[in-house]
Amino acid sequence: MKFVCLNCETYMSFEKVEKPAEGSLGVFFACPSCNAKFSMVTNPGETQMVSSLGVQLGGRTAPAEPLEMTRSGLKEEVEAGKSQMAAYLNEKIHGGQPAKGSGAETPGASGQQEASTSEGCPFSAMVAQMGLTGSGSGADVPTETATALTWTPDAKERLEKLPSFVQPMVRSSVEMFARKQGYTTVTLQVMDDSKNASSGLAWSPEAEQRLENIPDFIRPMARREIERLAKERGATTVTADVMEEAKDKFMKFM
Amino acid sequence: METNLQAILKKLQYTDDAKVVEQITEQSRVVQTRMAGIRHKLVVMSGKGGVGKSMTTVNLALALARSGNRVGLLDVDLNGPCVPQMLGMRGRGLSYEKEGAVPPRGPLGVKVASMDFLLNANAPVRWKGPMDLSPVWLGLTEMNVIREFLADMVWGELDFLLADLPPGAAADKPPLLAGLIPDLAGAIVVTTPSEVAYDVVQKSIAYARELGIEVFGVVENMSQYRCPSCGAEHPLFEGDTQAMCDALALPLLGRIPFDHTFAKTFDKGNPLLDESYPTVQRFQEIGQKIQTLLNYKKVMAEKL
Image (tube, rainbow over all chains, first blue to last red; front, side, top):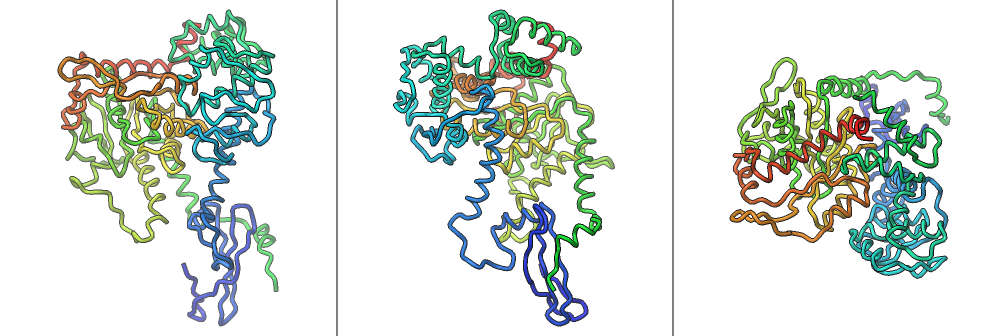
């Protein structure tokens, strides 16, 4: 794009770029003959288009760093995604409580240790950020743990049946739950209980039994809806009363 | 004299002289209006290519139509549209009326819109424009082509519209395309039972969820190989889709075998529609589950 001074019939020269507001660029041009000036102000979409081209208006003063645009763009994506995904994972794994810990190993889809910003597994960066520990291989017992936990053979077998990319996440989640409860051994029951605890809500046996009445393929959705209702009510446990309330709420859809 | 652009902008009243913002807003409004007569809009997606997404979409559409629903099928894979071929609708086209483009009806009355109807046989999609600079404008053009498909197609009243999205888990396509569809009910994800597929598929699920898209469940395609002679089924891969679904708190809606006989009919454009055929029945069951999922609140009221 070029701008022409119609008075002088000459191209206007690029002068500078400023950032007058978030997501906006002010690109200044002047006529070399009559010194008429104007500024083109971009909207966020136009600004993004320039950014996506990987160019700098007015030219570069220094050579681009290797993969400069990719790395800076991806970092934003990860950050943005991380906040939402981390919240989702946080809710599932920690029941809404922030995780502590630092520089944990990051489980990757391949099972190998990767940097915390690894792209191999979309969970890996968030998991590391949340301080969840994980081993390099799904089958290995982690060595860096505050309390040593043992896994029963059947619990270990159930874990190993999972796809390799979810094993570290599930292992960390289960072990964190087990430590919180003061357990030293991870059994099948502990694994089941940790799954229920991931939402931050406990379920009474009566409530669980009622949930069994829902066809299995609807159960995950039903569970989410009921937990959402329970949280709205400020409940910490899903009881038969909460179930009754949920049923009443959905009666209007009959 | 230094010019304080920020101060100047604060004094000015913005006007949309070029009417760009107005047009973009209007475009979104048109899509909303056009799709207002569609009860349930679903996308069928997968992070992975080659898992049988189009086949699944086509057969889910047929299954829903068989159940008495008015169904539309939008083939959004601009560069590899194959739905018309599968349904024996190659060579058909869109008819144009004052209100917009009318999608032709295929088997079981399913309305179909596809880029294939705008192309000559075997012709790839080619856009006018400087191809040496195509990275600059191609993606944007394609997104707006899809928007036009949504905005200019006269669907009429439908119970279901299924959109067959192109493969991919990244920001450029499927989840964002799903975002173009107003009041989207949710997404069905297709995978094959292999860890390579799981690795990519769960990324697309994660991204869809980030965008607030409800993921209804997973369909496992090519779960087994069905012998065309004796009908016996044998495993093709060694994955565990149920485990992936459990980890992601999603239902496994169904398993579809790799059925050579079945696949061949769609390849040839002579789709097998016999509802007594086992693979068709599998799709019928999945279609039933989808309908139930969409009415989950009713189910909860009845069963809780």
